[in-house]
Length: 203
Figure 1 (cartoon, rainbow, N blue to C red):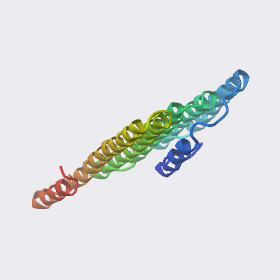
Figure 2: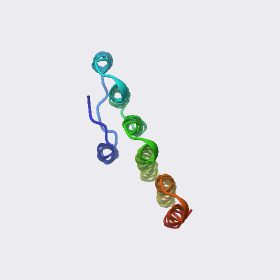
Figure 3: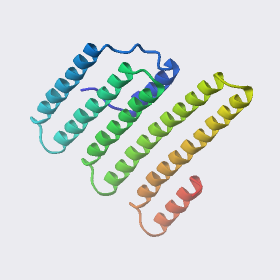
Figure 4: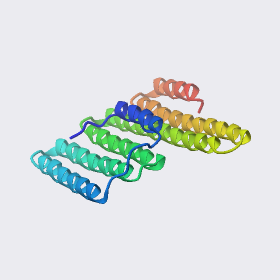
């Protein structure tokens, strides 16, 4: 099974949009062969999971499903190269990483588990937000290349707006993590923790 992690997603984001969807499309026979390979890989991964138990099995299944989803998205991106399909690959990676991370959080208890889940969600939010920014920026730049200087300026503004929206989503996710950590505290210590989080994240 492939290892899913946010570092890999971050690297993929840069590679996907710098490449500009230049890959060659697949023939129908190649597409069907790859589709069959993905199905076989999923069956094999799932069978491997059945030899495990408890949360290890749950993690294994989440990884198998995530790998299948990513592989299918990558296949579509190869079959029909486009920025949109490349974006879908990144979203599939972010979803898969979140689901695996969330299952791993179940090995922890109480507040530690809650914090772990919030951190996994924050990582997913960051990955998706960055993919969205890159997608919007790529589309705006592409459009600007084909139009006027005025459109080019508008494209830059669209890119700035996308970046600001993403930044807000990331801040909200990180704030949720900070508040969850405060829940492990009591009384004045908890109140100070919450106040500090609100101040830090401008909430």
